[in-house]
Length: 210
Image (cartoon, rainbow, N blue to C red):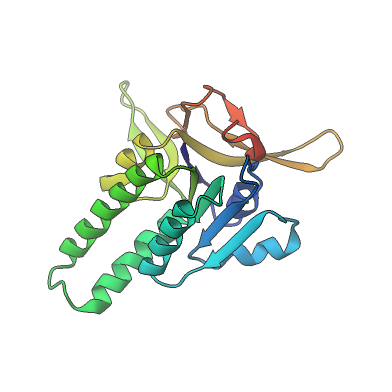
């Protein structure tokens, strides 16, 4: 199974994605592009391996080696928005594209392939992404803001469509005032979200694929 978890910077995407329960293999893997893994030094993650990468090739290689090893129940790819940006910058720096629109097309096609690959790799994959907002016209002529993962409109629907779960990171204090994080997985005109696994409205991070 696969999931796309999104929220604004600092919302707890990395911390909460790595809370996902392990299964029979007993290990999770985090592949990180944006150095956000540094926050995990403040948390106990004994069953987590971390790989920080600085190139797209290293990212893809780490992911594929991770699932081919059959060592991991869940692989967290952190994060998809930054991966797109890094890919474009690499292609621009390569000088291979006189028209940068071709570079964007290359990235968009490869992100679609990666999303599809994640559904058939033999372990669960969690993508994270930053959050964006778009103004959506309504049938009555009014407009509403819709929160969604920060991805190009050319791949947003395709990526989300290929995910079993799309969740927005949210939090609320419990009765003792302690902050509790969860994922909003009920879609609406205001929020892009879904849960094909159990049709839940909300999911605790550790129970994402349960």
